[in-house]
Amino acid sequence: MVRVAIPSEGNGGLDGMRAGHFGHCDVFTCIDVENGQIKQVSILANREHVQGGCMVPVNLLAEAGVNALVVGGIGMRPLMGFRQVGIEVYHDGERAEIRPVVEDFLAGALQKITDHQVCGGGGR
Amino acid sequence: MIILFVAKDFSRFALLVDRLRRKQDVRFMPAATGSSGLKQLQGMTMDLVIVDQQLDDMSGIEFVQRLVQVNPLVNTAIVGTLSEADFHEATEGLGVLMQLPPHPGEKEAEALLAVIEKITGLMQVEPNRAVAS
Image (cartoon, rainbow over all chains, first blue to last red; front, side):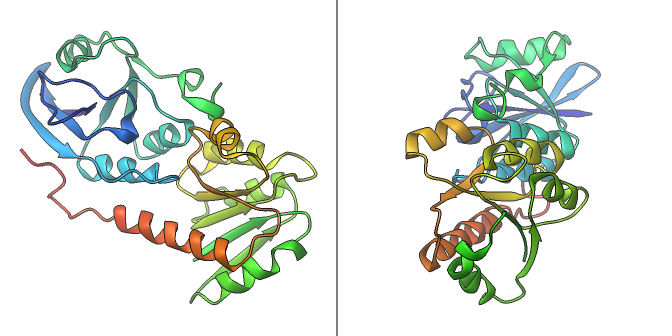
């Protein structure tokens, strides 16, 4: 089973909206996928964001059994943290809705984020 | 708490170090260059890295850019004189706790300890209760 997390605004959910930067999202919409099908959707509340606290959501998602994350933006340090704990990070910087991004993830149409796509001083 | 201190001249940091040492179980590991600091970080668990603005072989910001590739879990603070906006721009994505002034003292040590304590608290996750359906 794969558990993919989508940083989300408000209450999240498949019909909700994505958050632009994972560290500042309200919740993570977590989708459990088995044999290419959605088995369960659950909501994981994010923790308070503090300067330098990039590893807080990394730890939170790892403890929640998340294996994959789809972001619109992420910094180099949290990206490296996710890689270190075995969570694969995918990128979609275009769409604001959660559902089409999940559908593309299920179809294998999303690309893993590269080091050149990270936000800020760590990457560009 | 293990703190790696990367600086060419440690004398400017006496007040900061004295205050941090008052905390129980603080152990300092010094490194005089960026490359020696990065070597010490490989495979080592550290709680904090404090790096000076400029080292012989790289700047403090360059050091942190390399550090996150080697050991992203460790917290960092950089000595510097950038404006708040410039510091944010230069370190965005690197997850730096704060910029320290060239002569940091007790106030900065207290701030460092407070933010580390805050992050440590936020890192605590109750087992099996992370996902609410």
